Length: 109
Image (tube, rainbow, N blue to C red):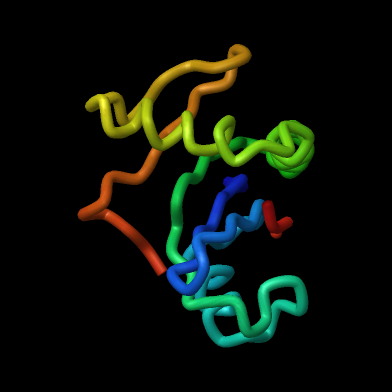
């Protein structure tokens, strides 16, 4: 499994978009300041993640989200989650958003 994820900085509310095959380990790396792009900008929390079968799908979704270049577009993902829908469909891709109580521990917007 692969994941496209959006992190949110608890420090300054910046977003970071990336993909990984191990979401928990990747978040720990971000919070340990070992990822150059996010170094010194954390602590980070998972704002949103989506699961994919292949790395190619995750990379394509990462590129799509990065192309939005808008905080509002990213925050709409959270809005849909807060309306009680933990799983919804967008662009024929199933999206699963993390609920606040299920938070787990790669571009800034």
